[in-house]
Image (cartoon, rainbow, N blue to C red; front, top):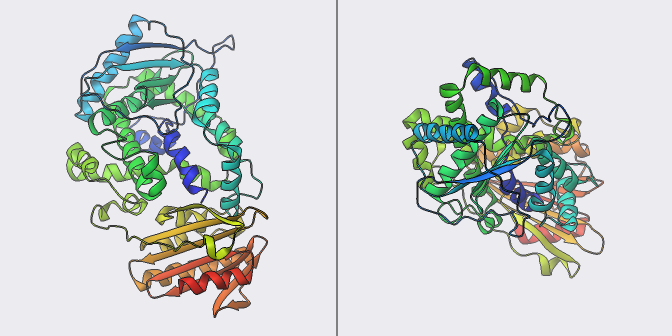
Length: 476
């Protein structure tokens, strides 16, 4: 769904997010505090000047260009870091390597940037390849699923959201760590640095692009596997930052974080559709829980093992006890491009996965269409595999959506069916019609039909009954 392109952007950008709220409770339980971080301005209202310096560290180089970072990025002016700051960063790196059990030997560039420089990077680098047409098609797909309103300005939201939320990031193309600096280098910046330096260790040890296959091509082919790997990466870095803070942070660091948390304002995040916020947090909250499960089972060696045998689905992330044995079932859809006619073109196809199935049921933009969290979780659990496709009529902007899913058991399919019918009745009213003996719902975005057949379910949305019948005849 727009999910494919949107996830590609989130995947390439969300590595840079430090979603402290996802670990706040964990740290608070041990007497410390952390939150989403935004840089402060100086008392004069000016941003701190950015600086960067190259340091020597220790491991084999890897070639991992960032999926969405453009090569013609304007360089940030380089200055020598103050000696005390250089010493502090070196200490944090040593401490993180000691905790994580990994080391480096490749040059790393440390870069401190101002809020203004961050906003420029977000606007001109992260979203430079995401066109207005891409955003328009994504909006058509996501609004069809009820996750955002029709005509929503998706591109502007993401640009503003990342500018608001980013505290630091690791650029795996240039091998630079970026930290957005406030008045000084306090607890929030230190915590951010420990998180981002963990990404350096991960990349140099396991090679994001070539070793893990964490790249554009893989993400476009299998968004589920991509989301799972992203969750491993971010969950690992989140656990490591927690352990670093618990082990090495000072009372002053704690006070700094607590003050920032108490004064935190996130108007863009607060105004975003619920599905976007939930999906943004996923690799941190659910990824952290996944990594914690492995860590409790066997420490960091068990976490390292997950890089050798990567998780394959959001189902495995959500249910770590099922990793690695519960392998997703491959589902394929026929090409409907010719059958639908000349004006219809395929604009997205991929795997929905358990997580996005849950989001559709629980995070509808209109709250009255949302199933309860418990009902949505129960309905989406037991997911076995799926394939979805979106077709766009370029003359009318009508959209056809097909989701063909298999479930672990026929009982799981039945439970999803019950949840879906409840969702459909809330969104479009109780079904009063049938198409090819299947319940049908009609709304402003078209007609939906739903099939349960053993361990399989099929959801089709199209603007006309004729198109529905044509698609069903190919799939039944």
